[in-house]
Length: 281
Image (cartoon, rainbow, N blue to C red; front, side):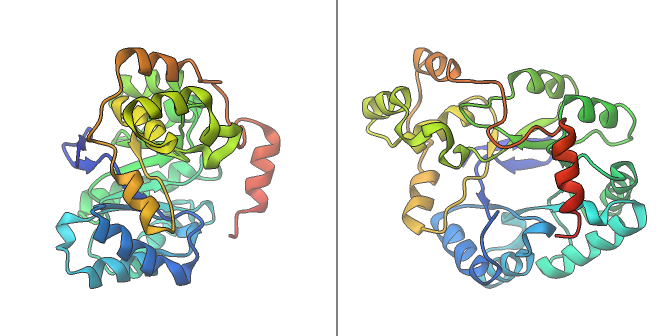
């Protein structure tokens, strides 16, 4: 397992297991399988409604808590200082832990300044080992990072071979914020699993398209959290550190970048309206 050192000195596994869209009644089983495969980082969120399953799996696994890196996110309905502060304690309760390794603000909408102040306070109290944001575009990110005491350690954004966030990463690198990918396989959009470039490179290494796409991101220094409910695919996604893409292969994959989202534009008014309707998920 490779670790990424965050801007506060905390070491975070580069490869983790994501539980987005994992049903609450399936979360414990899936996380148990992931931990048995070897994953030591699990990414969840208040809006996923499966923190309890994640916490139960970690507690029952017998693995020391210090060896499992837990990530969660505050949902926008809990933004504002007081609500965010209370929600952190509630996430700790659901995860059955005295601390969370990394806590993020899930979206760049509503009172994220108040919520971030609550993150900073919990960080100083030792409830959170690191703090950051998610889905913050360069304008949101720069605005926040330049006006807080604790610069975000991580920004979790849509990142895959078709949306590589090259420009955004430049801004984050300036302040030492690490890029964490959600949707590292683009949920199969834009024909990712049948892409001829990825298929050809995969054949050269006797690897799947998914493994090539994930290995590309890790060689770029990006943190990834591929999700699957099937143990065999968990194992495949985990087995990406025993081969290396050549410079020429990396360049070919970089050329696949469309430099735009395959899901939604966080700067578009329609997207903001959509999240306002989703506030009470």
